[in-house]
Picture (tube, helix red, strand yellow):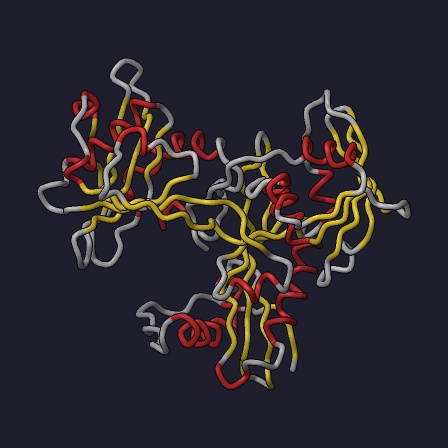
Length: 399
């Protein structure tokens, strides 16, 4: 068995593996276009593969992503396409791929990682854990009302609306931790958000402020392929009027669909506009995160300049030996200095719990209430609590 990064000549084998793992065995349709030169067809994101002779038996891709983190962005390795052929499962191939992927992420400066799991318990064993909560709404269109904002709504064909709505997304994303900046070449999140799908048009409704002309909200809507619930993949508003405008836009579909479905962050204000027995709200985790490099993650934080103190933190990480140890954190002057320490720790924590506290949802205080960390120095705990405050995490993009 040989593990290596996939090259251009491995593209067809990788497509077959993805079809088996995620496409129900459907064979990829042959391309009608002539093959491009080999140097132009290498995978856009680094993909590790394990080969049994010439046969590709397992693979994992890591996208080079950047996510919002307060005033700055954080580099994140987005793990995707983790797959193994059926006759080779249970032999530790994926374990090897994940271990090597973590090393590569650290080498590339991606001190965070995120993924959407096929099995939560499996990835938890490798150091990932759930971060962030979202609300998934199903709302009867009969409960949505027209408003004055109706007059300032316009509908656009999806792909033509990107430059119009992008500033709204960027402003909205800065309110939350872990939103994709959508600056990355691969995957193209804007294409995924606005393109027509399932042989159905993606309609983009835009609200403009009548005085300033600025776009303050948008949503994407598609009619259902079956059932009576219209699909809203993105509902983004940065002002109260923008939010009212989006609900008014959905009201207009009431003659054709009985319900609409959309996801929103945990602090979403829909209940202040619509409260009814028939409104369904599901609480779901956003995705799974992981700190890849503990020293780099803490050094990247930008605490309040008035915050100072020190913490001796013992971290248990069974997958990344560079994280498994005791670290001295010194907070001063809006920076965090990190050094390996041999002092007795004031706090002991595993990598999964530290990851969740670092993302801020669930909060460090809630994790302590659940018995997920050991505290022997209350002053150090108070310092860490201020360094890792609770926040709202949200992400709209899949990878």
